Each structure stands twice: as C-alpha cells, then as structure tokens.
Length: 181
Image (cartoon, rainbow, N blue to C red; front, side, top):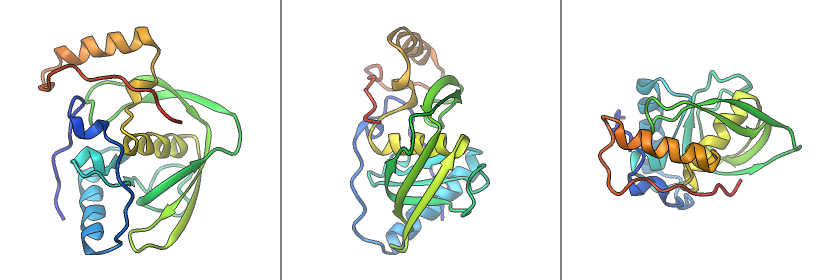
C-alpha cells in the first residue's frame, strides 16, 4: 500500500476512457488499497484509478459519505442508472484540479452496479452527495472532468485560471470534453 501522486488536469491519462477490469487478482487488490490510502491522505471524497495514471475502471470513495449504507470503499467496472430525472446543484471540487470549486449540476439519485475487488457483484443506491461522488468518479473513468460540465463561458474562465495556477505544468492547455452522462 502506497500513497501515490495524483495526476493533475492537462495530464493525458485523465482524458482516456479506462479499460474494464478483467482480472480480479492481487494486482487489483493492491490498486484498490493504493486508491484508498491516497484518498485518505488527500482528504477527498473519491479517487479514480486514472487519477493515479492507471487506465482501469476502478474508483475509491470515502465510506463515510452520506447515503453509503454499505460502507463500500471502492467500485470496479461501475455502470450507472438513474431512477428519475431529478437534478441537484452543488459545489464540486477535484483532487486533479486543486483549489477549483464550481457549482456543478448532477443527477440527484443514482444506482451504480459493479463489482468488489474480489469480483463479487454489488449495487449501490445513492442520493445527494453520494450520488454526486459516484457520478464524478465514473466521469473520470470515461475521461471526463467536472469542468467539462460547465457552460462555454465558464469553461473559458476555468481554462484561463488553470493556465495561471502555480501547480499547472502541462502544455498545451487542457481540453474540454462533453460528458456521456
């Protein structure tokens, strides 16, 4: 188990669609442990494998999130369904975009089906912050960042802010994508 560096916006690894996990083995177990340790050390709500430079469909979430009755700390190969059309607005941030917090629309309720690191099927039903976190981390698995969910004027402001950030070191400027969700 290791606390690993988190990739920042502009890193090409964050823009790739992650591959499905096919082997539920010791390597996957170590990845989940690394995700959890790095998440705890970073004081975040969630962390996806691509943020560590690993292109696999796995993310860790903070088990203390409201609505996490299972106390699940990770999900492998998630597939999301939305039981209704309700949406929520709320402030959202990302460990890959330090210091940027934006009002972001998300679905209010989500049903996430996937697997544990042992290959056991699991379903998580979440609302509010839990639903937001699951959607945010699943976006990472699709190469989408929460800044992609902003309107065009907001995206332009964000890109200018990112270019001036002291931690920003990638060229060219990060691209903005359209979320599939």
